[in-house]
Length: 358
Image 1 (cartoon, rainbow, N blue to C red):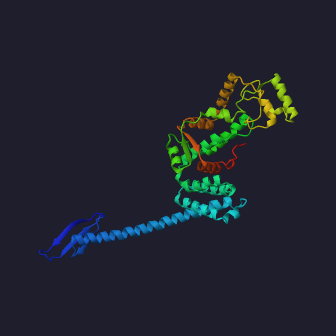
Image 2: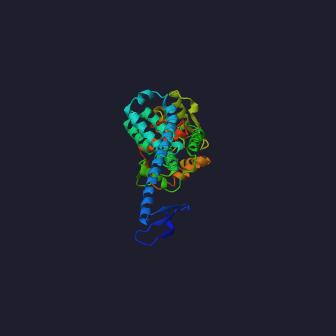
Image 3: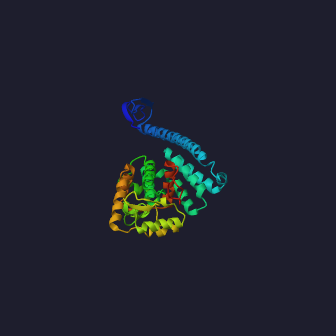
């Protein structure tokens, strides 16, 4: 408080009395009779301390009320999410769950974002589903304590990275598979993906990722290994390899329609699968009949990327991913955060360790 002396009346002598006129910033004046300047200063300091203590007490009460309201809002979100889950009641009676719920309430009280309440609810649900796996549960527990410290754009980026590295369609039809991926990423991107590397720093500080040496492979290189069934050359129609492939299908009671025209290479056929390496053993002799012509393989890859880039969202994801400046590993904490965020945005998203989407 700025105190200035506007006027002073004195009667000469050591024992004189003084009328001190004390002014405030709002030009309100109080006359203190018989007080010296040091006395006035001490008086105002005491009053200032009392006002500060009262203000702090009031602010503490306001903060408490806000925290209580946020925890009540969180309760209205997490109970409907988990109350009908299998073994939910058993978990409610488990001290581990109660400690986790306490931590979730603390995080909810500290957060002003509605999204965090949904995230925390999904993490509690994930604990109920996967709590018997200590490795997964450790990530869930840590994620609960840092939800409010992860920026929304960082969370969005983390979720996209997890999907690029782990999610593949299960539909063998290329157009159908890309449609599903486009729908998924469209729902995961309520806002633009972050530029620069501030999001990496945020995720590294909270312990959701590990930064490693080197760089990610380029996006098309990742797709060539993860979507091998789409990006193969296949078998040329009308050849001996074609006839042999049909024989193998018939011998193993597969429909001949399972060998379909290749969407990316005219006059060629391929099995309607996404991942050749994880397909049934009975089909592997057919994969051995596929052409290994490098020129044709390049044509298939080029045609596929043209089809991929025809989807605005998929093209955005590819271009953004190729600009990531470091090789990052999404650890168990990051997986818990990304998976629950994906579930929040896209309810059909698979559970942890069950990646793959139809």
